[in-house]
Length: 172
Image: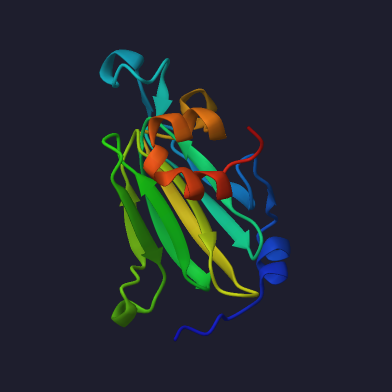
């Protein structure tokens, strides 16, 4: 089993992480100076986009990243802490629970991709645990491509995942 090198408070302070709207804390570390013009991008993207962006992202016990979706693929990288469960619902309603971490023998992966347009949420399921991860988005992240799920509307589309959705959204 992976033993964390530091605790969550250490990472929050050393990396100067701030609260994130979807839950947890983060800091953007990279935004490419290269820019794609809107005409070269998928129709879901309204405007030009940087080629790529990257963040540090920290979730602690009791916190979760609420169900949301974006218009780009997002690559997740594990850095420290305990495994992170990432709940991924594809457009057809198929749920995949990814395990981001370093315990390969238990099915964890140190890197994985969440596809554009999928609804996803995450949390650590280890008592007292935390997960420090990184997320790289290409084309780069822009809040105009970000959609935070409402509980009622997402449950209406995916009633088979109603209980999970209720546990991983903020408000209605």
